Length: 140
Image (cartoon, rainbow, N blue to C red; front, side, top):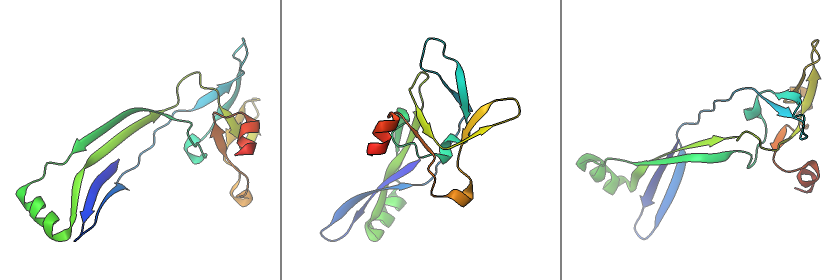
């Protein structure tokens, strides 16, 4: 959730956007083979810990203007800052999106493979989810 406001001084006016709340909800998801079998390959754990770049698609943006009262307008004149409104966005990963993952792979006793964030000691190791192929990620 972002707050949109503007600041006005004697000869200068600037718009600003400030994050006032950020919430993330996710469900476990798996990556499938990109062939006719669509066999499950691995489960992605903690996707919000990964560098996702432009992986998510924005499906909803809602801007709610503030209801300025006489008192808030008066304060805005003297402080030079006035809130224009609040913006809420919703981003999703569409089903069928081709994703490349880089991170730590772990195989449990059941034979299930999971992709997760690298161990903290190896902080130089990346955890990335991207729509680019591996070669494209290397070029970036």
